[in-house]
Image 1 (tube, rainbow, N blue to C red):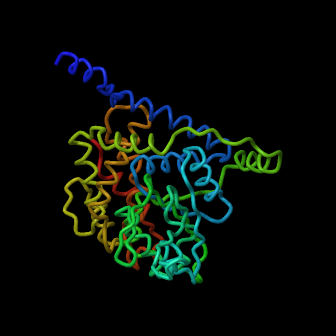
Image 2 (image 1 turned 180 degrees about the vertical axis):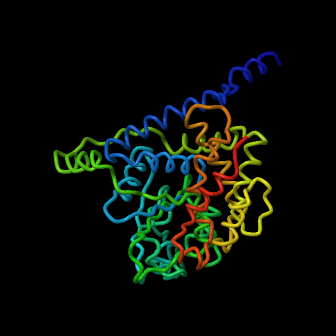
Image 3 (image 1 turned 120 degrees about the vertical axis):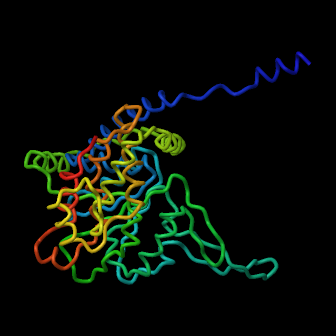
Length: 350
């Protein structure tokens, strides 16, 4: 009996790293990832920060910017640095849902002559999917992403197929071309944790971009994390504490975006502005993403708990695409991001 107990103790698994150690690991991995991405991407520090927040929050992101700002290269570089599989789909008007998710193929057994269908997985079955120019394909094809983004699985011919883990959709959209495009439905937009505005680089950054991309080929990038470690760190983010005041502040910001809100923290001018320009405000998923993103941001910076400042730092990319403005806002040149800033100025943190 003593021998059995001794053997049991000898083979007991060692205790895993503590959450404190995992927070340090995440912060160090983020520093290394940013350094690796910086080998290929000049500038865009805020976009990269938000991209990593989305990744470790297990979310998706929509990138809006004119062509040539390295949106595709950024996602490819992220996949290389984190050792994740990567697929790119060029969304076009003739793209079908089966071109995204996969299709059943009829096969015949040469020995028996028996025929059967086999599901051939589409390019969506990857760790990082780049949906390039997602608004160029009809809503029917856009909807092919909905189940995968929310439930991490695809249903075809009555069978359910699980997505690889981790699984993230990073989509791009060109803001200056309207002809031949299909606006993303609100249900599709709501699946994206962030909508990130990719801006032109500063002059010094643009000079460095031209210099670095027209010279000698650069060496391969180091691998910072594995898919298994990313999953462990994503689980850690959910365990990061969010104090009651942080959760309440996130909810207050979201509720303040609704035109019928009775939020007492909003000033009279802010309430009037929301009623004047907003048709529909953000829903509860926005509050969830604000808190999750705040947790990820805190852990990425090596802090043990989320703060109100973390929530406010990601409010614009989380909320802007969830606010549906009315015709008066469009006529007045008022953007959703402007309305989020109005809310931030009126609803103060505590």
